[in-house]
Amino acid sequence: MSAPPEPNSLDAFVGPAAGVATSFLWVLTSMCFTSAGKRIGSTMVNTLRLIVAVLIHAVTFRLVAGTWWPEATGAQIAYLAASGIVGLTICDQALFTAFVDIGPRRALLVMTTTPIFAVAFGWIFVGEAIGWGAMLGIAVTVGGVAWVVSERTHIKTDDEPHPHVKRGYLLAVLAAATQAGGLLLSKLGMGHGVVAEDQLIDPQPATYVRMIFGLLGMLPIILIYASGRNRPHHYAARARRIGSRPVGYALTVMGAVVGPYLGVWMSLVAADRTPLGVAMTLCSLAPVMILPFAVLVYRERVTLRAAVGAAIAVAGSVFLFLHAGG
Image (cartoon, rainbow, N blue to C red; front, side, top):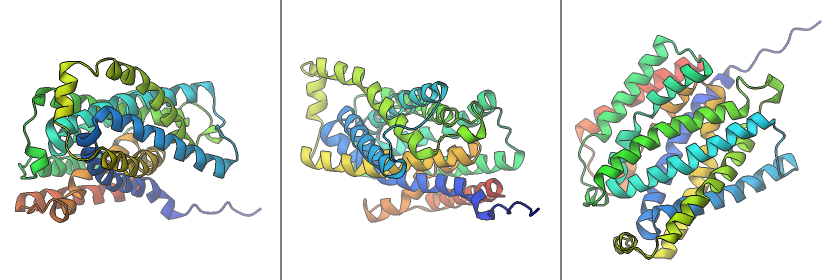
């Protein structure tokens, strides 16, 4: 009787690689959605990008599986539904509003706390034990990212005054906690710790289900938004918008393909293949990866502090990558 084939050693790196890819995709989508939000508002961006993502995921799943709905238990659907509402509706609505209120740099600074929430949630709810080596990698990576984004920059769109600064910071904290909670619920929804190994759902259909319920979760927000369109604070918000609305819609569609379609898919691959805290850390490298774009797009000079912080974050992520992969 022949021995079973040895697993491909590269498979161990799929999860960490997906986490790093997620961070890169978040850079692109945050730039698209920040610019779009200033043109059409965060609620419109959040709604439209979910509609686009649901349509693309539905077509993808249909082409791959030949059906419109994945096979899953009631518990899995419930977890994925909760994940969609927590991680896509609440988290992203809070984050996109924070982008407009305090700018992407300050919002991303607060979001560096997300891996801490993820480690705690993974330990409490899934029983994921993370060794000291991985904890060190997480601490070094988060520290490097925080060092980068805590420096004051001179990007004009990030330094414009806004009347809701306190609200922006509170919403960024809410986004950090709900992003980690949404990823935890996604992991449970895929079936980890809930069903047998042969009943696990792949990340793409799991993302598809999340998107549907995330869009459904937006309905109350849309109704509240529509009912108050004639109130003074809505007129003030519209007066602060800049640029062309058609460009805002185009940027939202571009961001939807990069983020809710590819980015969320990759984040679930990372959560599926690695512990929650490790996955969340590798999915949180956007503030470091955005530095080249700050130079090329915003014509910003990268300071020594930013370079050192980026080097620290990269070193920590490489250590974490190898630790998770090995």
